Amino acid sequence: MDFTNIQVLCVGDVMLDRFVQCDMERISPEAPVPILRLRGTREMLGGAGNVASNVAALGGTAVLAGLVGADAAGDAVRRLLSGVPRLISAAVDTPSRPTTCKTRFIAANQQVVRADEESLAPVTPPEEAALLDAVEAWIGRVGAVVLADYGKGALTPGLMARVAGLARAAGVPVFVDPKSPDFTHYLGATCITPNLKELAVASGMAVDTTEAVVLAARHVLAQADAEAILVTRSEKGMTLVEASGVVQSVPARARAVYDVSGAGDTVIAAMALCAAAGRTLTQAMHIANAAASVVVSKPGTATATVPEVLRELGARDEDAPDADGARPLREVQALVARWKAQGLKVGLTNGCFDILHPGHVSLLAQARAGCDRLVVALNTDASVRRLKGPSRPVNPLDGRA
Image (cartoon, rainbow, N blue to C red; front, top):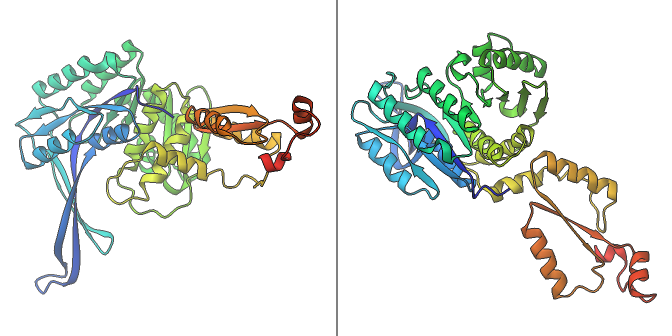
């Protein structure tokens, strides 16, 4: 799962996510509200900025195009952008609107209140033209485009239509994190990633069962003339509905959920990277689901790395039968099929491996470095005897395994 040569253009609403850690000591005598004693503040990129951060954390290169205001929050965004490796800023400075800033006050490990600073006015024609210039400058150099729509004004229907048209002309897939209930704003997208609430509002249909989710997804799929809808369903996992008729679901992994902030950003970043790498949407969904499982276990607006995602995918193989020695071929074939469905690169090496020596160790290390999962095929004891003589193997099959 190597995304080092892939670039993703992230276009949309750039935000600053601020988390203020507090102690909650008592109720105010002035009003029935808690008194918070401030202990510290953390600032992170949010919105389209968090999508870009996730692309970079997963090993790709992110190009971020959005609007950043001439204010303190904007200065913080610029500082954060400059500190993220593999994140290229194509942000447009604007003096006419504030930088969107969400300040969350956290006490006793939970969010007490959130204060938003923002403008919901549509972008001005000069701002829209500057964003389109940034897209045109990069569209021929990226493997995927993400439209991160948070309803803060940066992505007008006209701008999204122009970006989608440029991407189609360049043969680049377009992924959309939607906020508008009108999915015709996302015409021609490769994949749209609504959550259950967004799907329910956009379709006007029930989404309480998997069957209902599929029907609602097909409804909005036709509206948007898109290739696929990926519905994120919180603790129920994800469901992918493709225009071709393919329907696939993947369950969420049971684990402690610390914070769901930004999980959707992780999903769409992973989907875009996988598509740019040539993975199918089904494979991309498995990887995105694992990445989301990682970030919800972290506080704040978090990201996932490739090693973390690989460990999460590996944890899902824990239900496979244990074996102290060699595993039967049929069992390994089932594991390989599962790994491939998850979009993992599977390698194979083979040998007798009877008396382990440095050459064996070097071979195994090189083989493992070239893939996400390595299968080692061992000669049977009878095969080793035929190859090396009647006194071999020194170690029987299970011992060699």
